[in-house]
Length: 240
Image 1 (cartoon, rainbow, N blue to C red):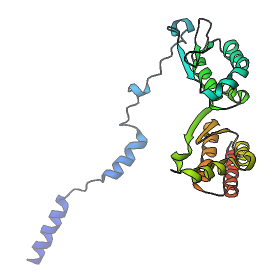
Image 2: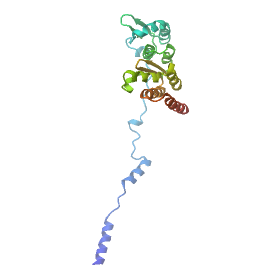
Image 3: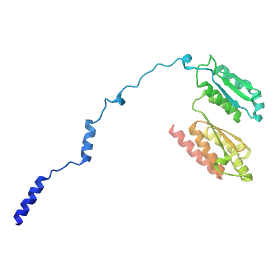
Image 4: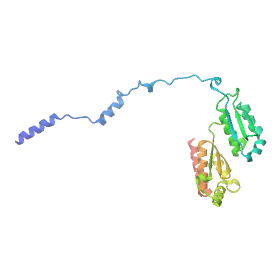
């Protein structure tokens, strides 16, 4: 009986066939590339279109308006020639100050070459209206990688009364010392207007300056903030 049972076990073992695991099949299939479809739509070449001429691309004349607050009328009047000249001569746009609506109006014309000029000119005027020097705002016309960022001190921490005044004082520093240090280390320009903070610079530099200002608002001592931004600035300098 024992011999018959052993024989039946051997027969059962022979009747089972070994199945290959799926993992090994997948591994083998990858290098061969048998199941990869390389002739599909992904492999087709990207179509090449010739650039469209400025005449065909330009539609009706576009206009942008920048509102000027009352405290910026006098600086605008004094620096009008410095603002007017690059917009008209370099960007070939039309510009005027509307006395009724108190807006600077910028408009394209038939001489406008680049469509992006209107946006650049608007950013330039907006930067001046926010309180930046004309020389600093001009960088927006010359360089493409510059941006403007604005935020409120109370967005970082909801402060009131003397606490708010102290936070703004920490950001500015004695005689503007802290603000100048942050500007020089991060290669940005900063304007403090009441509770508003405006930063002009490249994306990476704005990020560094914003972090430093937020830490000051939250109560960090300036010496600690200086150390942090210097470390970050040296890291970015090594990276590039």
